[in-house]
Image (cartoon, rainbow, N blue to C red; front, side, top):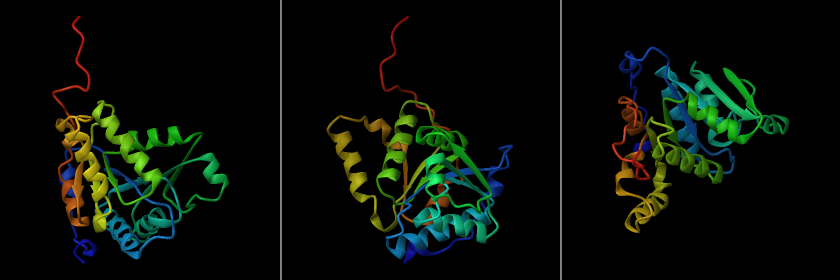
Length: 214
């Protein structure tokens, strides 16, 4: 299948103008009871991030897609920064072999830290937690609180229904069509990596709310 092909993108050289390592936050499922289609995609994304020397930020999980991407990155010599709240550590959900582990007090602190540290977001398929993270970061970008790319990796058409719902929001005027560029959609790993070649800050010339006259 096309989305399971590996492409050896050497994209790290394209970020030479940035005086820091590139950090990409990946939102994804922690459930272990999912199709191998998604597990394979997460494993191969981890390999691509490692080969291109991109540090991955995620929720430090050891199961599901999160466990798959973490194991793959470490296997291929890459770096993972896991950010996880204390109660999850106490429940034994933390992947203990990551390059760096940051423990927060709350889920809110966890998500804020992940966003602050990320030069881009990639959303792999996931459940309610992934959906909540994706909706929040798009909202933050809408409000100008996050200005970097948000890439929805639509493996196996997983996000088709959500993307249709976004279209409904716009057609029913609950969201401006100007916000269509708040996110990008990639159907394959190759497309997602191609999108990372051009990391630009979101600089809208409009605002969610009219500005008051001073």
